Length: 268
Image (cartoon, rainbow, N blue to C red; front, top):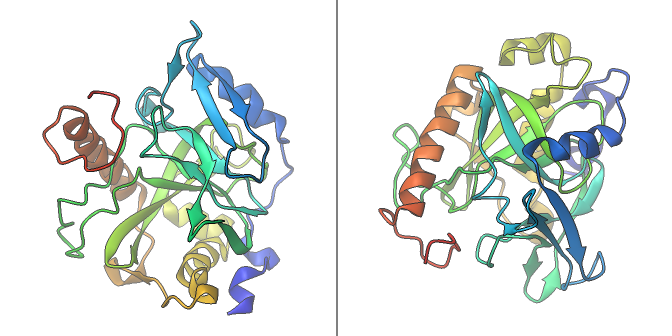
């Protein structure tokens, strides 16, 4: 188990890094800004967002998903090689980034995650609909993104990425898609266009992602996570199909056609 929470070089896709500043530069691409409240590492911390006019917005609902063919906006909650479990607070007004809390305690991973981790805005894994192949319903969250580039992307950055493939993780009886992507500004971006390119040019990365997410909850006494589709990393076409489908589910959520439960949609 411990080996799954360590960082063997084979699990990292290495090229000269463009630096954390890349995330800051690209953050402004959607025309907005962010600010923080409360101290980092406390339950009061929040990272909030404003549009160009200064109006507070939701990074989940108000940032466009698609930029152009094959390029999507992603919001990064957790920089690579860090442990605090930061996430968009889907049940709070305007969905700021906050640190997850379990049983009254701030949640950290037991070991650092080795890739930049975040979510795709304007997507929703509908818990009312079962996925056709696996038979599991969605986990009630936006679709997750695992970015494999060389730079550390600053928390809260909005970055344009190329989806390359997707893993169908099954967590606690729900499907939790993990889209594998790369920042369009990464030195390897032009060479990675589908999941087969990741296997060829970044050997061990796909396996590292799958095993990290398989094992990461076991220190808490949870069972291993499973993966659908024979545990295969599916191709770019499937990743984009997942984004298209969950974008449609998000539209139904916002339009009131799906049960929102406690999720904040900004439309009530």
